[in-house]
Length: 253
Image (cartoon, rainbow, N blue to C red; front, side, top):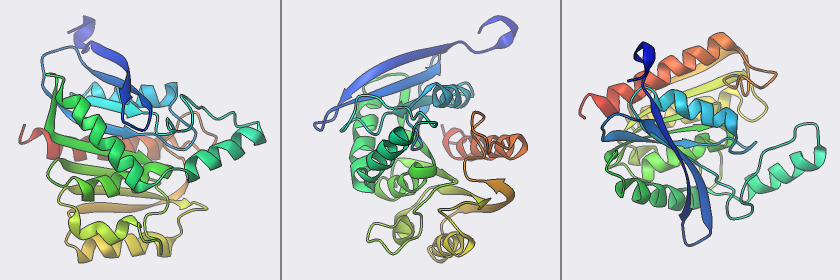
């Protein structure tokens, strides 16, 4: 323990060979002896960046082995959007469109395989959280790896319940873990009928879940470096996320 009782952290930057390229991954965990439950922390569209590293550290500090990969690695070794640059925004949209649920599922398998080689990680207890573009990835992974993923969160996620063949809501019956869904009232990508379609699927499949339509906030409300940041709603997201993980990943650890 550090001064004042704070847990010291160990951080590592890995390049995980997936067979489709090298996936740069930020790994952070407490210094104390594990093994710790694994959290797959999936980036939003603007890219793997220090803001997300800080969020991953916040999760890890409560007793988790957190892995934050660059999901764009097939196209680019690293990417962070320059919001004032329309070319950068257009490139981000292209990178985002190049991803699929199936691709991220393969990446998750490689992440868990990597974690299995580390004695500090307990890959029998896995959680996943996704933001914006990665919200649907989190739910898809929960359906693909029900024996491992005990908790999944989608925070202002997009494309959760669409007419696409790979829409996550169609996989609800394959999810065994608990699900958390938070959606913003003001979101160009997810309106109330979209949200209701997802929650109906979760209810009909008898998935243990908590879903909230967060009034008065905008897409991206959890990110402190965005103009739409809402501190109260963001802190509530942290409370719900920590509770989800602790309830499902620590009670049986």
